[in-house]
Amino acid sequence: MKRRRFLATSAGAAGALAAHAPGQTGPAAPRRTVCVGMGQILVRTGAAAENLARARDCVARARREGCEVVVLPECLDLGWTYPDAPRLAHPIPGPTSESLGEAARAGGLWVVAGLTEEDGGRTFNTAVLLDDQGRLRLKHRKINELDIAWHIYSRGTGLEVTDTPFGRVGIPICADNSTASTELGLALGRMGARLLLSPCAWAVTPDHDNAKDPYGRDLWDVAYRLFAEKQKVATVAVSNVGRMEAGPWEGHYCIGSSLAVGPDGTVLARLPYGVGAEAFQAIDVPLAG
Image 1 (cartoon, rainbow, N blue to C red):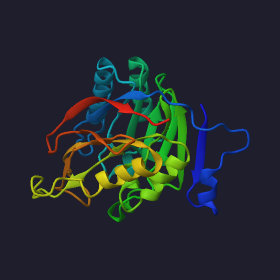
Image 2: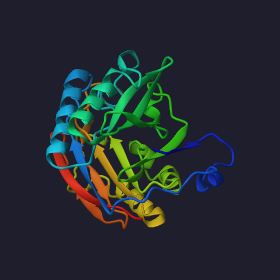
Image 3: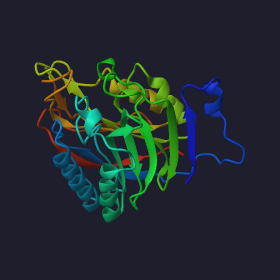
């Protein structure tokens, strides 16, 4: 399957995004819809084996519910901003990604997951796309990492997309798609992506009142509608739930509220909000041609 790569640090990037390499075809024609599983699972800080087992169970459930691809949260192995991540992270490919690959192969579906990656003494906040044979087809390192996490994660320097049976996709992570960095999602659209599958870890302070200030409406909703308006891109973003037990945001709550927006800007699904709001939903996502 073809992949296209864009180096965020290269000169003349805007022109490179719009152009195809010699001999390269345009975006693969996607099917009209794809069934996507949204796996809003609990991630316990530092509990890698437990979290991985929960993720594998979610993959199995997605297969039972007829999904072709399932999206899991950001840093689902250790939790986002876990201080001991540099010591406990694994390479990719490595044991954690391969365990999820086994689950993908057993279920016969594609998997998008956020993992903590070690590479050359550095730690990355990474997303992977595994195909239905368990093979690593795409890897993305988070670019727009919050400054509170810079002492833990090195930032990524590139964007890639890849072709799948359900069209060309990108796998940006959480704040890569925020209103402060919409250029990244729009760039993926220019590279031909028609579906963004985004692992996230959406967190609030314990006193956040969701009834008065519904989470994400002025942030993720705005950005994802922009991707739809400008590039006809659909976005499925999945956050974990659970209390953050360590790190710079210790005591904050990851609250789910996972979100799917279609290529016309319509909200297709919004999962429950809450520190204990584990949820799963299979949705049919329409895809633009």
